[in-house]
Amino acid sequence: MRNLWILAGLTLTLTTACRGADTTQTDIPKPVHMMILADLSTPEEQAYAAQFTDGFTKKARRFETISLDSFSDETTEVHYSGVSSSQVVEEFLVTRLGDDVIPSTDKALLAAAQRVSDYAHDLDGKERLIAVLLTEGTKNKETIDALTTIVETLPSDGSTTVYIAGVSSKYVSSITPVFHTMPANARVIGQFKSDLKTLLRSLH
Image (cartoon, rainbow, N blue to C red):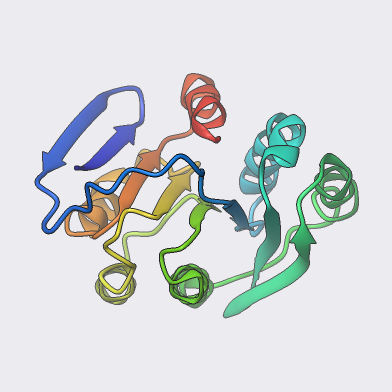
């Protein structure tokens, strides 16, 4: 079963049948890896990223590993990748999110999506991946088309969940259709505080 949730003051649930679903049960939970990729190109995005990261800190120890990235110019910059802990998240919060804004273009959003796809395929379905992209979004048609192409490459085995969080209300209608055909779980999340709380509760 694949679900797409849109949280932007209004919640909409879309459900599609999962083709070839594996019904095999296992008593051993898969290790879960976390990726946080933050667009820090505006003060508003910096503030949202800080709120999310602050709320996430106490949950960090639940994950096997964590990657902390930021959008930078036309790509992404990896600030930390390794064992997940509250300490490394707190350090990221203090050292990165307190700095000046980091200019980036839509190409950085595409680079972030591609990094998530590459990471997910490296896990080969044997472990779970949760990726959170913190960005206001975009409505540029070329970017949306390219993003859709990347999203369609994500593994279809249900092991990957992607959250696009902090999306501006003016971009929600452009970003949401990208994930209608996504072969994984996805949530597009707005900027309301209630949405952020829902996101943080979902991370486990």
